[in-house]
Length: 218
Ligand code: SAH
Image (tube, rainbow, N blue to C red; front, side, top):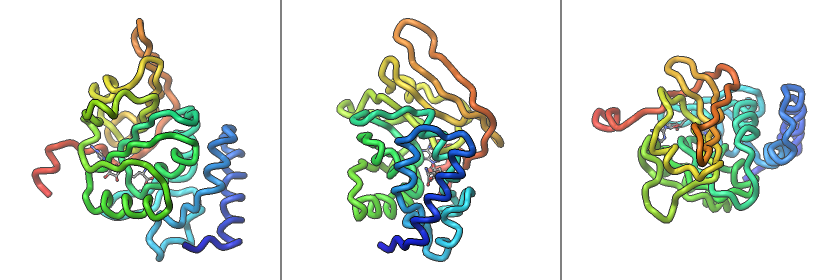
């Protein structure tokens, strides 16, 4: 797939802008400079690939804006070799960033159209993330997959799903936008002998995290 000098330059600019917005994690910035965001978009939209905006993808969903991907990735604090569960594969761009950070990524998507397309794309790009079609509220229940060092949710959740808390390791971190119309970005650290530590990182707006009920009507 094509990655022109112009597009490489646009990524350098994008990362400069991310730094100016307070992103300081060098591993995250290096991953975002490396991964061609335009590969995850419809070919008709590549011109705007490096603008800091969410862009429509299949199934009425959106690829998160670069500053959101950067701040969620920074909050997640991924170290190489960690097992990371992602809810909302979508375009696969955030998945690719997690892979570049050295994570073993497990990603769940509930829309079949997106699951099929993105699974194929990630394979073509040689990312070894494992993609699952299913309901992220439940996480991954197969015993060999849990628990996770990190969990990232890339859709707006009305509440913190308990199965996801259960599948997080002690001292593990979950980054999740919680709320209805608008959400608040939360970082939750699971503590072995205490209530989870919940930190707040401001308002944001994601497409909703949908549950089983919607499956029936599609
Ligand atoms: N990280 C993705 C974000 C896509 S938008 C990207 O940047 O491209 C959020 C995604 O979450 C959508 O693809 C939507 O279908 C998916 N989603 C919503 N509810 C879900 C659920 N319960 N389980 C899994 N995926 C869900």
